[in-house]
Amino acid sequence: MHGRYVFEGPNVPGNFTEALAFFRSGSQFRMTLRHSFLGSWWQSATGQNLLAAEADLLGEALEDVFGWELLQVGEWGRGRELLAKARTRRQTIISTDPHLGSADIIGRPSQLPVMGDSIDAVILPHTLELAADPFAILREADRVLAAEGQLLLLGFRPFSLWGLRARLNRAGFPPGLRRLLSGRRVREWLVVLGYEIVAEQSYLYRTPWSRGSNQDNGIEHILRRGLFNFFPAGAWLLKARKRVYTLTPVRPRFRDKAPVIAPHAVPSARTTVSRRA
Image 1 (cartoon, rainbow, N blue to C red):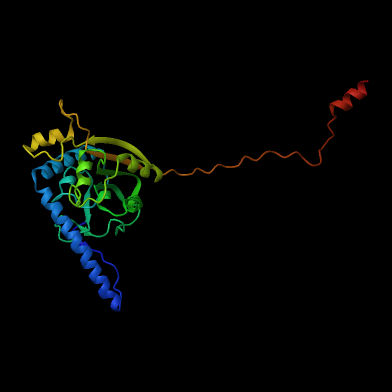
Image 2 (image 1 turned 45 degrees about the vertical axis):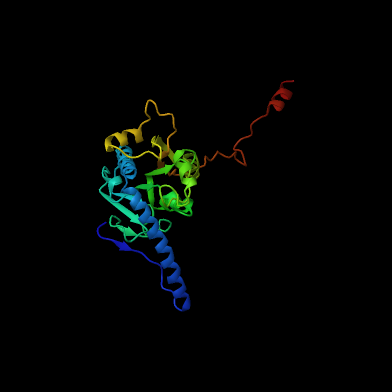
């Protein structure tokens, strides 16, 4: 998809329009402020190392993902870093912030302006953690994903040092995250929706208080546990496939009914014994 498209709701006449516009302006201001804080964090050394590491991680996960359309729901990063190694014909990013330049479509993740069963792969990079209703976004991604399509998700572990810092910070960490979801809970949601878990990987073995250093060295410490690193991983990756099982109709087997009027009488065993006696 080329260019940028903005999808908005219908106009409501009357005084309610002004109240709705004021409410939308306030929510958009908070959303813009949240993305501004998150954008500043992406420019830090820790944010840049995390984005580079997740781009490499998704590049390995996308090696067997082919097709026409790949959809990234939610913007994570300053550009299209996560889609650099995608092998589909087209890649599209849907974001809620119109001020971010890398988005192709501006829309709500819970109401995607995409036809159902039309996307070959969907990426949710920490999108569930930025939403008020993460399961609604997961169901919407399931709606647009085609049969046998693949879904890739990134998330922070709540029971880790990153989860601890997120709970200690009122604005969340990284800034803007509403709540952290464990990989086990998201995996249970996917199983309920009929998905098959293809791969699961833990990463982010650096502490959230560590200062960034060399990018290559930082990526190595993020993706792989060091020899003297005893801290658990701070993030997870899930890769699932949408399974659609077709029902094969079973033809009923008709048994031959016994004739109501027999062409000739068949003597029974009792009749034969009585005659011989």
